Length: 279
Image (cartoon, rainbow, N blue to C red; front, side):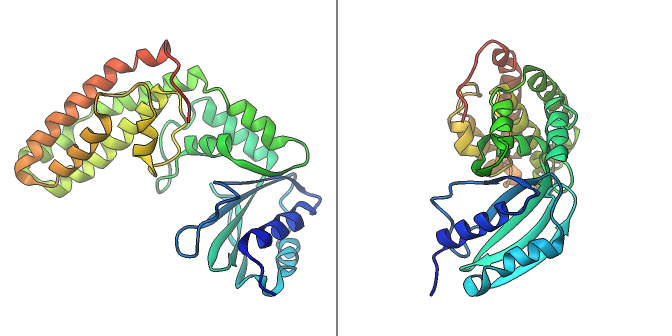
């Protein structure tokens, strides 16, 4: 008998939650709207006192039998994404990421204190972990670990905002590479330098609006809902990128960009007295 994805996930979560080490399980996105095969993956975050052994996790996955097409245990170990297992469910890549409760709490507190103001290792954003946990859908929470963590993250810390805003605005002041690319009309070099600059711009903008920066995905959708932003922000960002692809328009692109950055700097003070809507 073939089970649909929702039923298989329910069985999987139930089996994982029966391991004594597991405290909480959460999922990114909506449990009622999984992607179809080839259109995305499913990320399941599992928080434990101690991560269960590979053998124990393998046994849990073996219980799924022929309801899954592929199983791999310990496909990655350690680092930003914890200890990871992989399951292919009806063609949908499903990632099971295990973390300890203690390391998660330590990590979150370090991020909130401003210890990691910028991206790390291949575009991993520490602040994005806070965004994920703030919005995670709880599937199992034996000791209310995830619920308490979500409450901890519900208010964006003022100290964190000040640190991030100052750091990224300072980085935006370094325009040497952009200016060199403009003078040379070097499109590829300009886009290299502009990608770095846009990253700092976005992180400052999110901090001004007191929203944890999730990643570079769906950025325009987030900005659309911000109260504090340069006028015509989305349209101008796209125009900067479009014009930057034409050697004869690089000057124009950089002019628009410079005006946006100057406006962002002026708006940075507003974030301290206004409380914009959260997402």
